[in-house]
Length: 473
Image (cartoon, rainbow, N blue to C red):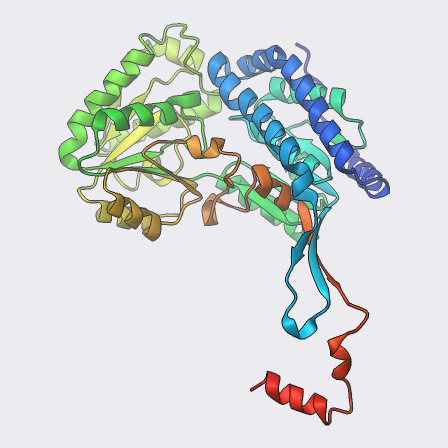
């Protein structure tokens, strides 16, 4: 496949102005928005094989079923959820008026912001580009998308798909490397939406600051899983295996490390081994196990494992892989790390790969303290049969989202907002929250023919004086 050329930097600002002028001249109404989403659904559904081919080309091997589940089903579901509810979301909301101002009326109206910029990452390059785009289109905006340069085949697919669905003055796509992304971040959008690492998120926010561009940052971090005393370890192993080794761990909400009682560690290791062996009998040409996206990410993970091992950690691959094959295919098997030093990079930074440290922690309260001593995570997973302890974890920890007795499934709930807190992000989207993120919630006060405020005007004597004294009593 011949990849399209990068977008010239000189084209970025004129494209934004074209999008803005078209949106201001003809803001999409309900009919247009629903039609846009319906056409996007039809085109996307018809081109699923193109999407799968592009993802496979970028990853070297991307599990077909995981791609259909995480990058196809999620997009189709979000379109359906949004189209069914959009009319209700767009209706002005009546708000009560304080008694002093009766018989006036108040309401909230929802208006598009204008042009939304979206910067998408490489790990779920379709889902994390199209779901914010769906929300922005539903809110009546025009969109300028910058897909990831690390998934060039998928970025080309997105450009082709969106050109098939939308006129160029409604949705545009910028392609290119880091220089294009940096210039894109500095454009004066009406809202800028970024998904990626915390480190890059800081640069995006700094680039947006001179224009006072509002930003939504969907970042990451070290999402912990707590296994409480007494929870069935086989069940925890099965559910953590699903969440951790999906997309070979290249998931922003994958469990990053496990907190569990010291006495349970060996049994839990054996349960994980059994789960992984059942799911991946071999990694030789296994189509169900995804590869690491590129050589740089592969080298990073290998270096972090080597550092941990050199400093006394036990690195425990759960499957055997030939070293030459692993390097040639960017293949890292599901791997546990035991007794890693707290200051090694595996324990300080988001892993973003199929590597899972286990940390001994003999009580839920100790696990809470461990989590609270670190940056607030994007996700938190708690496995427990004790409702009181579970409630304690929910009350005493702060994270972007929580799954109780499972992993990652909270992101698939269109009725729940998805977003981080602090270093794991700011703002939220999905479903109604996405519509609100890309809308201006405009308060409107309608004065009645007779206004009670007519009593309050100089000279303040008589009734006005008595009313002021009453209201400030």
